[in-house]
Image 1 (cartoon, helix red, strand yellow):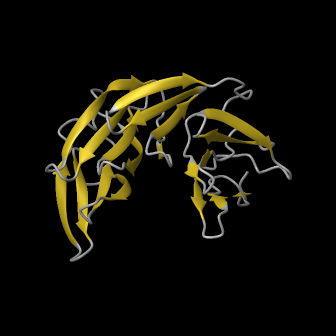
Image 2: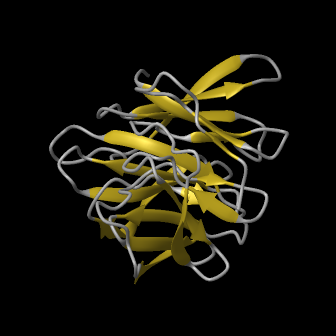
Length: 216
């Protein structure tokens, strides 16, 4: 396998690396002996146009791995890998119209937003529901890698604005913003990392500084 875009630690203690770019097999690493095996995606991670881009994957409370992927032309889907069922893969019935950067919330639901629509995946039933945000900021946030903070909110990196920060309140399932003072550097900050000091550090993809979020 090649073109693996990320890894998820499964309940069986093994790390699953998710393939992209139309690759049909993923890599499994066993940390106990550094052994490797593969699993076949059986067509679920691939699109008919023979290309796909896996954005990210999360481990749900039900022990399954949920993967957000798109075909590079706006069509997206959520694929599920079952580590405890012979690594079986299947696709959720709903198709998303954009880039699904998925994030696990503190309530066990998986969230992604595409433009001003919040999509919520319920792993217990594999259903997807949509909710339109009101008061969406001019220019929007777009689908992005959210970071779960200790307060239960999902914070977006400042991709489209240097003067406000967007976050999802998972308790009310609403989108909110607050003003940044001082202003952040605007750019393709792809995702954030939560540190032990409870602050979020955003990766400086095209910036010369690191943005730090202290929480709200």
